[in-house]
Length: 99
Image (cartoon, rainbow, N blue to C red; front, side, top):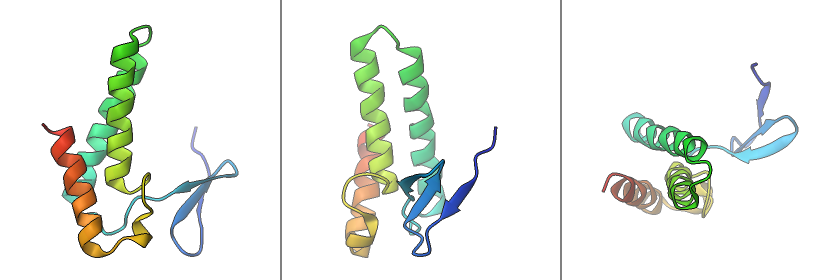
């Protein structure tokens, strides 16, 4: 099933099924985006696989949260950060995810 996705004029949000979601930071280098999306996918898989194990679910959800923060989809909005803050956000998330 493919969902219809529309973008707001300012490019900051997508709308899926009538619900607005923050887009990823467009300044992310392609390799950084790929690494963060990998961690996001692993975290989401971990949530599904860990049903019944509260500690494993919490760890997987923390990984999802950190990946989404690195992507700029959570935390301080990427358009409210300067270039250095944006880069520090994704570098910090990757350091923690890959440690």
